[in-house]
Image (cartoon, rainbow, N blue to C red):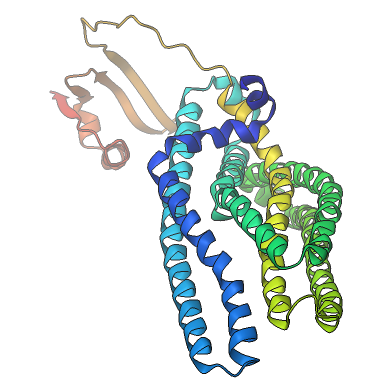
Length: 402
């Protein structure tokens, strides 16, 4: 099991979800209740149609609608509770992951920071942390509840019509093959996107650090052209990823509508020959959506993990990089260090001397500036002095030699 987790970096981060036992317990109980309410809704629709509307039985219609209202109300209340729980899990996971990354960043060797500029590091970590944290979104964490919905949906379909059940089951392998093909392209596209964004971050960081040189050599137009090339390259890769997602959504829509049309065609024939009722057809359409949509979501997880996998691998590598060693010995400071400048002179020209023989004594306790009387009367020196004091935010004691 440990070897499987190490090979799959997404599972390495997802195992952190096991810490949220209380939240998982709430989600489990609410999912069971939600599954029951979802299972009852098509049966109530069947009752309203067959016993209420077709037989013109008003009390049955009222009872069926009341039961449907209660099921929907309970379902919506559970959705609110689950949304709050999912947000707590995601925010906590994101915070803990970012804290671990930041702690690791502070303890890395200096060589890592020499190889990359600050902009490149920030962009890389923000992108990777956001991608990995997206695995705890409601869409992903809720996937375990889809299993219950699929089982309850299949049970309802089997109860209503085994013949129509075959139509729904055929869709599952078709959807799997579609996602399998698109997931490989999505993973490749995501790796390219991360690489392009990393290059752009490095280029932008270098540009910001060399603004003075760009102005000095009048390289505005050259940098603008390079910027447009970087942006166009990034947008082109992003467009490919969007089209892959679009084709997946298009495939889902075609399969779902195809199943619905086939159910009405075959179901209409079964109603015509007297094997099932009209209400059973309506209920079957509802149950089919309870199967096809969760199955699509479960299979789409492969697409989602394909997008996250490159970031998870990079972040895993980052968190396992070698850190600087911390010594166990503590250096005792017996004597405060002292830094002195004696007889320092400074002048712009031969006839314009700004500083003439001053002593600068720096220690932990006090900082002394020993001046000749001539410097005290030099206004330009005091301008430099106060500017230095303001920038350093430190106090110097001035002692004048008479």
